[in-house]
Picture 1 (cartoon, rainbow, N blue to C red):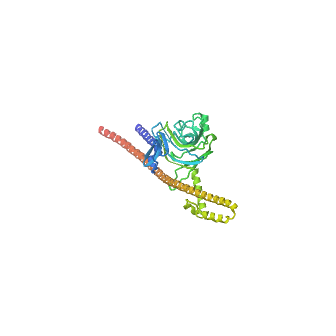
Picture 2: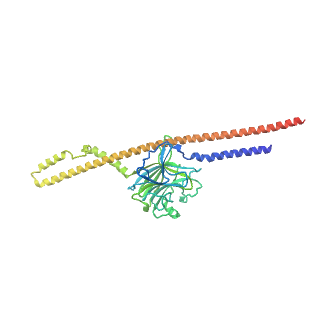
Length: 426
């Protein structure tokens, strides 16, 4: 009797421990981002030149265009390790100040969020495959890196104990080596900040002397998301560029990691200048008495020839003053022609600025819609997890009750059998 009770108690505890272990090992899988989190289709431009991944973007390695559940994106590495991928824009930026943002998604098969290397680059030469975060060792410029980073040792974690993906900034002057510890510490500009998830958006505000990085977390429903300051770092003079190429690199070695780019946008000084030109043009059109010239770009104002003839007739009796009057009138005509040319250029710049403003507004609205749907799916996942936990508790309780009744029936029938044998013997 005591042996049976002990075995029943031991078996029940083993069963409970096994169920808890199953729940604990499956929860991290549920926490990983999946394809259903995306319900937004990004209209990626089609390639024109052979070898392009997108229009004006070239890719190497395992870089390719993919589409998952209606979401079109660029994949740098797949879930089959080892894997690598690079992509870069063919035309360099010729400005020292710009703002960039990219929407990334990192998927993994691991129980915990693992990241090998994923980086955004602004370098003097297009990014090429190498051991430095998927780029060459002797790169020249700036990189925004997402990886497992240890702020205490100022270096990457080779085999992390606590998985904590972080984003940080690194720089190089084409002479430092990634594998040298001292030079590695020189490369790192900031210990960075912790990423809220493996899916999100990063804003990079680049100036020639410093860089500021923001992170866009996923907010609750019906709340407009606001970027959060991640870090700000000074760029060494040796790594400051007057022009550079934009690109992405990713490498997957130890962990099967999938690096995807859903969206990428850049705003340069030309956009700011276009906005200022628009305001100046509006002020000029409102205050200038010759604002009708905007609709008549060809030809001079009709009153120019008349004014010249009238003023020339006044000084016709003074030949020595006629040349000065003609020169003054020609100067006025040239200034008016210059104003007409400036108005024409401002109008063209205004049209271009309106086009980019429309594109930016559409992208922002779609981004807000995507984040709203992501928040809804996150709430649904929380409710599903709660229901799963309750169902598991009820199942375990039911199992314990069934085992208890089985044990009671077993004891009862044993006693009944003993009584029957005793009665038969008597």
